[in-house]
Amino acid sequence: MTENYIDAATTTWQQCRDFLQRYPFAILPLGATEQHGPHLPQNTDSLIAEAMALQVGKQSLGMILPTIPIGYSWVWRDYPGSLTLSFDTFRSMIKDIVLSLDRNGCQALLILTTHGANPQPIKYSIRELVDHSSIRILRVFYPNLSQIMADADSPTWRPTNFHAEEFETSLMLHLHPHLVDMTRAVCEYPPHSLDYEMSALPMGALSQSGVFGDATVATAEKGERWFNACVTNIVKVWRVFLDLPSDKSNQPS
Ligand SMILES: [Zn+2]
Image (cartoon, rainbow, N blue to C red; front, side):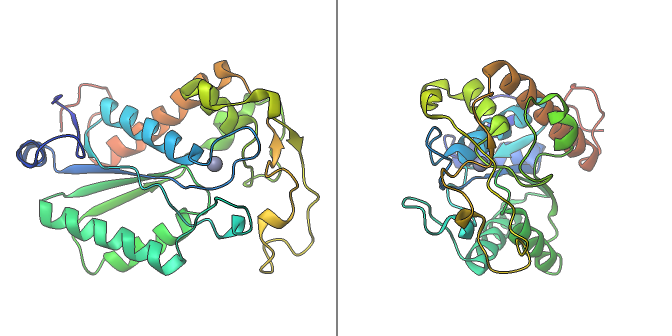
């Protein structure tokens, strides 16, 4: 057991008890199992969330919870292998986990997701929990991402919509290169539909490959740089949220 973080899944309940008595904080990574084009595995978001949660824990404080491997992925409903929880199930799952942590003595929770459709159900779960739990909750989805991606070699499909392209592929080339098949990476910018985000038209219906952007220009070097920048940004806001000093001494104020 290390001093400033603990893995809840692979330690004992006594270790978790001792950790939470000292540092009553937890980190919950939320991923997805969904299509990520012809070159990335379906658990891309889960693997990135898991790696980020571990690094954030190492650089701050928290009991790291198991990565939730299924998210809200309705838009990929017609892709074989893509799984989704319903919006209400997802919200209920968040609430159940938070109420468990509340009973465990946890006082603050960082919900870290790397899947772009998860923030909505997370947002509404947190609002409902305000009246039922005293745990303070911070939720993040790649804070300051546009700044981090300023040196990307390709534009995003839409300012806030991208998928399985340069950014995600680069992160995976850094974290799990053996799971990326760059010989199958493609560049696809599906045409915008005028009613996109104004109707029930799913994002998945617009693309041929499942890629929204240019995956062919991804590199492990960019992935390492962007991964570290993402971790730094998350650590920064989490430490402020916990009222910890901004250096990495790991001592609560
Ligand atoms: Zn993804």
